[in-house]
Length: 270
Image (cartoon, rainbow, N blue to C red; front, side, top):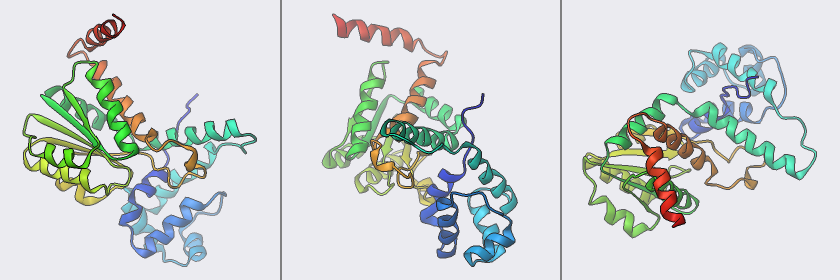
């Protein structure tokens, strides 16, 4: 049984900040709607007081060829909605499941593979973040150093600015910022990019200008539009993608990373 289906909801969420006023009105409708309707362009245009041309432009901005393709994918969401949550345990589990569903819709296998290639070619890796993103950065350092990667995590403002000076073409920098607006993280990514380092940002906010200083923009699931997103640990979306990169890296045939991992376990137990 196929457990996950690609949803366009996280795509709308990630593009939201780049929408025009009219496009945000359209986005708000599709994000909040909970019932199966007549989703024809004519009916929806009348319902939310926009033109059919605006619906078409909105669909294309979300990455579809037109409104018909957009709505075909949107309607699939209703077949996979969770049933009514009848207790607090199911509430938490269903919210995590919704977040995993969003992650599945956003993740790109080819992008994960490229990032793993960057890791293999980097002599040193820096991962940075503030607050809950800083906790995720610390976790990434802890996990990846155990398989032999020269990695350092930074969650301090001054260290991010100082650290930017030491990056070069042999470096790789990960920036964790769910909002995509953490000034210190963006500063380190920009400075590292200028010095020819590989740069990757993890964010739920898809901004066009990231392409100017990031080799990869990894979209993570947003908690903002989840009905019960406030019960989810903020760093969880980052950790899910990090685990995918870790799994791809450790299972690659290029190096015996499993052997290195076993050695670190023995060292910790001795």
